[in-house]
Structure formats: structure tokens, C-alpha cells
Length: 149
Image 1 (tube, rainbow, N blue to C red):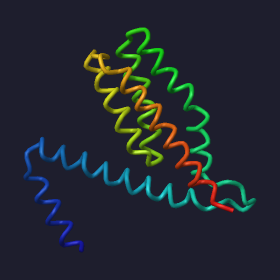
Image 2: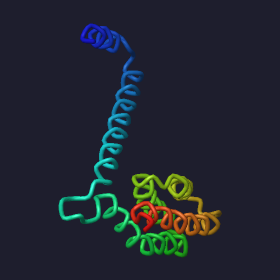
Image 3: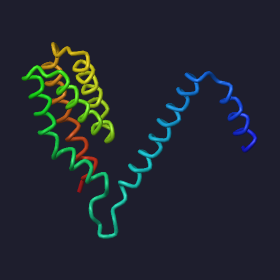
Image 4: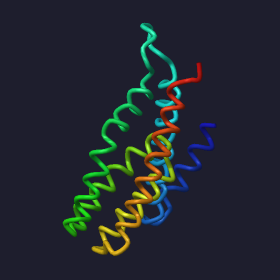
């Protein structure tokens, strides 16, 4: 194994800087995914007092914050504030992605990109899709943290 790592290290030193940068980014993303997987695995383990796990706390925070985050997006759209809308969508996207609500994160990504581009033409339609998917995600996440009796 050590020999393989040495060969890889030597090969990496000969790569153009842009390829090396791309490999570093990929490496960081892999490490981040592994760390997130470890957090999720630990989250399902209740503490000694039999309190809800870490994941339950995170889900609870997202659910509690969801109306305010949706309002922030709606307010940004109402004010035709593309950067504000983009920032609000980005915030919800991150929380959704961290909890595995990929469809919600994807919709938020689309709205974030539209806001960054300064185009809120389809924002109302996206907001309604985000609201619908946020409710679906909320229900799925609540089921996940509250096992059936």
C-alpha cells in the first residue's frame, strides 16, 4: 500500500496545476461525504438518556426553520431582489442537502442559480414547487426520526 501511495504521489507531482486542483477538490468532496456519512450513522444512535439522536435534532431545526426560510425566499421574489432570493434559496438548499432531501435541494439550486443570473422570471413557479417538495421532505424526515409504534 505504501508503495502505491508513493507512486500516486509522484504521479500527482507531474500533473498540470489545473488537474491537480481538480483532484484536490474531488478529494475534499469525498472526505466531506465520508464525514457526513459518519455523522448520519452516529445520528441514529440515541444518547445514554435515550434522548432523540443528533439527526432528530437536525431535522427538528430544519422543520422549525422551514416556514421562515420559505418566507425569506417569497419576500425576495416579491421585492424582485435576485441576490436576496438566491441567498435564501442557497441557505435552504444546504440544509436540505445535508439531510438527504435531494429533490428539495435541487429545486433550491435552480432558484439560487436563477437569482445569481438576475432572472426571477420563473421564480414563482419554482417557489411553489419548493413549497410542495419542502412539505414532502418534512413528512419523510419526520417519519425517519419517529419510528412507527
